[in-house]
Image (cartoon, rainbow over all chains, first blue to last red; front, top):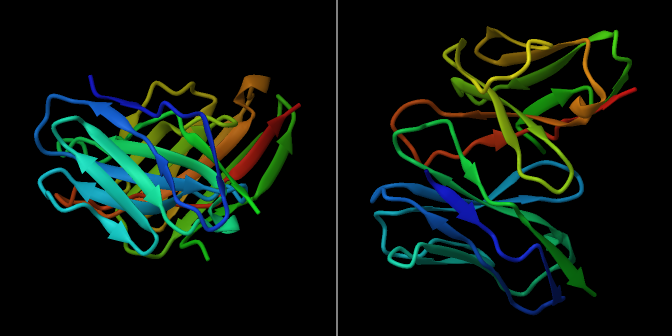
Length: 115
Length: 115
């Protein structure tokens, strides 16, 4: 069975600095999809970035980028120029292409931004 | 602004009450989801509707009854809930088909408290 591990329950970073959140997963599949979601105190789960396993190029969305290491089964999220609005729970999620619906979620990392 | 709208935002009910949670999306998505989320935990999938038909029921107790009246609406009917059912209930939607990289779009959730 696939599993997703986020080993950092909480991380803190100074405003304007860079922080990296880790995510590892276990799967025997070669084709799959990975996502990072953000959930601020306002509660809405917001997609931050996604990565297709068949793509070697790391996904980037403005200040957010991933370091996708397929062989190591690692999918870390880098946030550059951290802003106060980045404070949230960050969840890593995996989806098998055979399942359009079910996401396997990590336990989450709480990100604190220090002003 | 969220594209998935959930009402009410907060709900307090007794164990003998009957209430309903509502979810609406107008993105043309044909898959809709209900999740239960406890504090600081990832969401737990409850139900999935695909083309208005129940596709997945994750062994949810019968006191939770989902309904999909049309492709834009999703309801969750509640009856005789227990205190442990107190949680944030999230609705999500996504495109159907073979686009496995299509993300789920979430609403703001309903914070449910059972007295």
